[in-house]
Amino acid sequence: MGFHASERQHVGALYWAAFGRKLQVGFPDAARGEAFVTDNLRADRMFVARVDGEVAGVCGFHAGGAGAAALTWRGLRDKFGWTGAIRATVALAPLSRAERDGVLVLDGICVDARRRGRGLGTALLAAAHEHAAGCGDREVQLSVVDTNPRAEALYRRLGYRVVDEGSMGSLGSLYGFRRYKTMRKRVAR
Ligand SMILES: CC(C)(COP(=O)(O)OP(=O)(O)OC[C@H]1O[C@@H](n2cnc3c(N)ncnc32)[C@H](O)[C@@H]1OP(=O)(O)O)[C@@H](O)C(=O)NCCC(=O)NCCS
Image 1 (spheres, protein in one colour):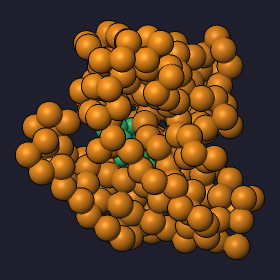
Image 2: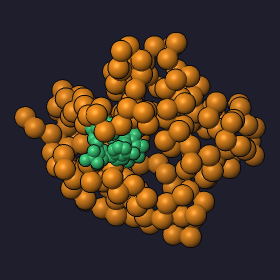
Image 3: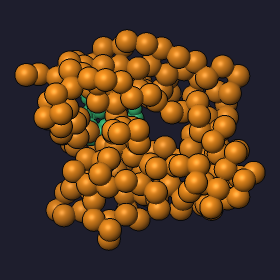
Image 4: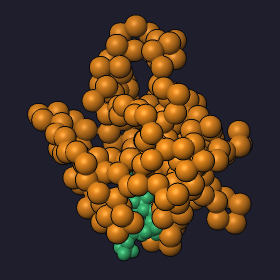
């Protein structure tokens, strides 16, 4: 659980490489979006996988009303002013996922492109399940977008099942995906 202050830039680069395509819609440009998200990642909302002491993958989660990136109104307003904060809040709202009682809702799982296919994603999900079990949660939930069939295949193989589907409608081209699935898996006792 968590990352050291010295790892923040590395974690931010990893998170942005995986999710910047959709998050950048909320920011004036990609560079400022990456810097803001990086500065506001929460170490207490992330599982981290390391290989030879180096961060190789992360898996965010929601708890207590906050996800892996604390993109708060106040933080956005202080950084980008009122107009920028309103823009970010409106643009990022369709990407937010509500917390649910008894369910650990994940918030972005990604593995360094050079390290994929070696079990790190599976290990991060196992850590999430261990955490959920410790918190007394019944299920772990994640979302996967229609442009990511390999990730969906992994989740299905691990026992996740689709419980809901949604559409971004005409905003799809803006965020880089049109549809998403919500998947859940029961926590073993
Ligand atoms: C999805 C992801 C987290 C899986 O991590 P991983 O460490 O490669 O996962 P594992 O090694 O435990 O399992 C490998 C399986 O993941 C799936 N996978 C999904 N995308 C993959 C990718 N780009 N490269 C390799 N495997 C990928 C495959 O089904 C693969 O199984 P296969 O080797 O039989 O094809 C990782 O590929 C990733 O970071 N992708 C980019 C970000 C992303 O899409 N995140 C998911 C958002 S829902």
